[in-house]
Amino acid sequence: MARLSEEAGKAAAVFLHPHAINLTHFTLHDDLAPALKTLSQLQQAWLQQPHKVLEAQVVLWNNCLELWHSSMCRLMGLENGDVRPLAVSLPEDPRFKHPAWSENPYFDLLRQSYLITSHWAESLVDTAEDLEPHTRNKARFYLTQIINAIAPSNWVFTNPELLHETFASDGENLVRGMQLLAEDIERGSGHLKIRQTDTTKFEIGKNLAITPGKVIFRNELMELIQYAPTTEKVLKRPLLVVPPWINKFYILDLSPEKSFVKWAVDQGQTVFMISWVNPTKELAHKSFEDYMHDGILEALGAVEQATGERAIHALGYCVGGTLLAATLAYLAATRDTRVQSATFLTTQVDFSQAGDLRIFMDEEQVAAIERDMARHGYLDGHKMAAAFNLLRSNDLIWPYVVDVYLKGQTPLPLDLLYWNSDSTRIPAANHRFYLRRCYINNDLSQGRMKIGGVTLALSKVKIPIFHLAAREDHIAPARSVFLGARFLGGSVRFVVTGSGHIAGVVNPPTRNRYQYWTDGPPVGELETWLEAAEEHPGSWWPDWQAWSEAQDRRQVLAREIGGGKLTPIEDAPGSYVRVKS
Image (cartoon, rainbow, N blue to C red):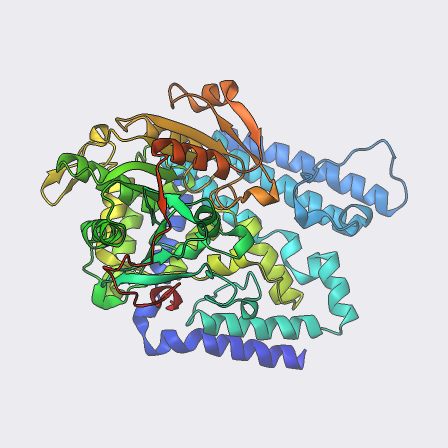
């Protein structure tokens, strides 16, 4: 206990130090204000319907009394074997898998009490009258965070597994966990950067992002990588990949067996990858338009120089796809025909059904984000990562809190989680434009977005499109992707993959995991489309490759990196991707 107290003091000092020397570091009010206001609105709605609150309370009291009675009977050995639990954990809920949660009367009482109370709280949100839909969604989200946080599985004296570990190690697990907590707060410069994997086992350029290539172009916003061919001949049409700027590009170039880049190169694609800069406050003014001009358009010019080809295939992932869609509309308006076909991976262009992330997208919360960006010049990467983690807090937050800070265990080395923790900053001007013009106003799909004085109309994008949605995606929901695909003016091959935003995309054929669905263009409702679609086992990558080849089957001899026109600057993966936030 003495050692635990000492380590807790160190963790507190590490947390307080950066806030003490820089008050702009402390933004607790902006972080908590939306939740407090939303829960206050929910409380006001309850006060307007006291009869429903009373009914809910009676149900809660009855369930608690019945649980208390059955628990007392069980403790005294008087239980009836036919009595079923009042609250049952879902089979996929890993929090209560330890046998003691059901076999030990004390822990079974805790578990069932928690589940009964959780269901009661959720019902109050669902049955509240006269609650605006956006407010109801926010209330459900914030209440879920509270419910997840207070689960008995998250605390030492209410978790049988943690109790056993603590007594068996004489508290050494808690001391070690407190040390890890201090390290993670220091690593986050005063903010807790939850340790999801063993970061010491990975290094970019050593065992991640190791597909051979060269950086052939660089400016303030991006480096352009050209990957070395592995086949004697390659497709005539080169491939330019536009990754999201809110994450680093190597999600598409993880370990060799998971690398989409390596796989595409092995299929005869000449792959070029944009690697976005991890910006500092000096780039605060860089806008969405700058990312189009200095990013995609500059990259197109470099690809043309390196290959001599004007007909290019472009691929955009997540917000990189949103930027690509806007760029394609700009190219169509200016009669620029360099991009002859395009792929969108889990990309939204219409934000009317943008899913769980809309919880954070209203005037008040966006204004708070803008205030924070005005202080720093950028959106701190840890805040974006925290928002994504909160959407699945029972998968991405609390299991690691328990395992790392209470059990004192270093997590397993997982490349995907290392990438997830390797966050990037976002320039204030770019993020402000994206939040307001896409999420708040939905200008892109509605034909109201202007860039460089040009009004963007997605309907003028007539090139062939491969459009991928992930069925369990909580960031770019399949329904939203499906709806947005209908705004494009050309032929669309719409494909739905199993799993989510990352695992559904990073799904190499050798692993033979998940499945994907194909049918006609995105017409009608997504559910109807899926009912009629054909299901295929395994990865969607070969389907994409077949579609890509069908756009232009011509081949040429494998190309020299830079094509003799651009001098390679350094080896892939370059310098920008190595910059830590």
